[in-house]
Image (cartoon, rainbow, N blue to C red; front, side, top):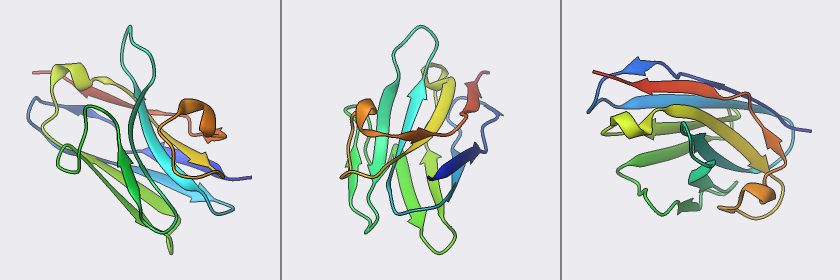
Length: 120
């Protein structure tokens, strides 16, 4: 079974960009990024398939949330751009053995999360 470890979360200021990493081991999966902001439900950001196809959450696009995948390194990256206060939250990567999906229930394995805090 795949094991996921996120890293890269930290304190940033409004307008900053931040790149998060997700190291994966074992299997072939579609990979997604989600976040849990204070007082809100877990939210889908973006996902990438094994062959590189992408799908985005309702409030995101390739400029706002840039996802890349390096299969040789078993690593997925998420670059969040133009971060604002409301982007504060715990960011998770997740793996799905099914097709690329925006649904939480389609993801089988989750990382531990990495905290992103946006504050002036």
